[in-house]
Length: 66
Image 1 (tube, helix red, strand yellow):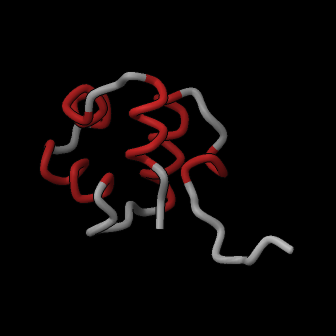
Image 2 (image 1 turned 180 degrees about the horizontal axis):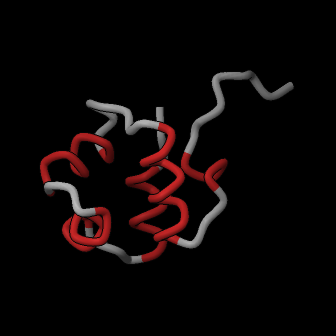
Image 3 (image 1 turned 180 degrees about the vertical axis):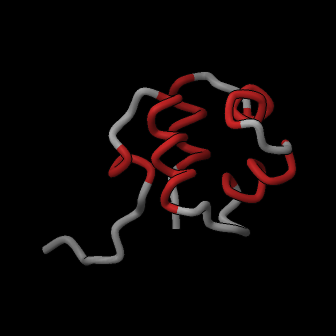
């Protein structure tokens, strides 16, 4: 699971803008944002760089917080 959609909303950035910066289709970026598809690690790192966030902010940990 990823937090791409949440980070985009926090920053007020549209998926279309991210798609353009990534050189990917809007449909692909939307699939990432809706968690229908997970980006490759390289793509996730590129998204983090474009959004100026740590890549860890884009990932939902599957570990429970105690």
